[in-house]
Amino acid sequence: MWDERYSADEYAYGTDPNDFLAEYHHLIPTGKVLCLAEGEGRNAVYLARQGYEVTAVDSSAVGLDKAQKLASLSGVSINTIVADLADFTVAPNSFDGVVSIFCHVPKDIRKDLHQRVIAGLKPGGILLLEAYTPAQLQHGTGGPATDELTMTLMELDQELDGLEIIHGQELERDVVEGLYHTGRGAVVQIIGRKA
Image 1 (cartoon, rainbow, N blue to C red):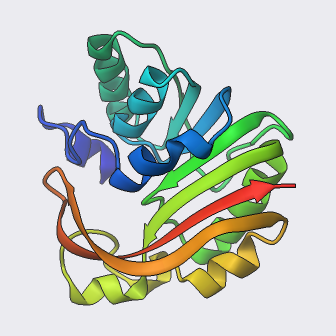
Image 2: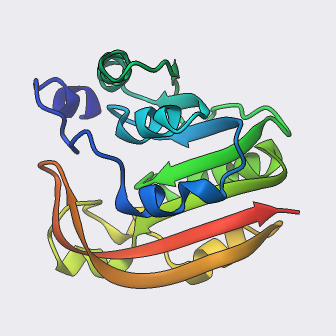
Image 3: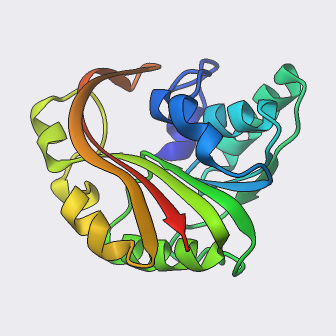
């Protein structure tokens, strides 16, 4: 599905960064950042332009090829890894930040992934996450087709045990990101710091 979506010339979710990331990236200590389910690279390239050393992981080689093209056009470099997040290894204590923007995977995979992410953060490292909540299904403006792939603040509070949650909320906001996120969205936002 994702290779097909990313095979068009245009960028499916645009080339501008996610609004939540753009507003709060400064909370991530300067250094190494891991971007999960990064697709065509808009967030990874933005972070590289801010001086971070970025690794983007996604299951779509087509998407990550476009991410490399976007990086080149922007005059920055990013590392890309084609991998399934179900078994992607995050080296312990290796990242100053992890960015998870609309990274929707099944709950059992997500819970395990979040434990690997926490272990992979250096002390003081930041997880910055935005995802759709179950309420998004009523909006029809993008995101998963089933609530199994959505997230709630309560679920994330439990899954991210080990992080100090410095920002956590569910809200509705306008999400305008390319062809596939367009309109009012029901989202959850988390910023967590590893002790």
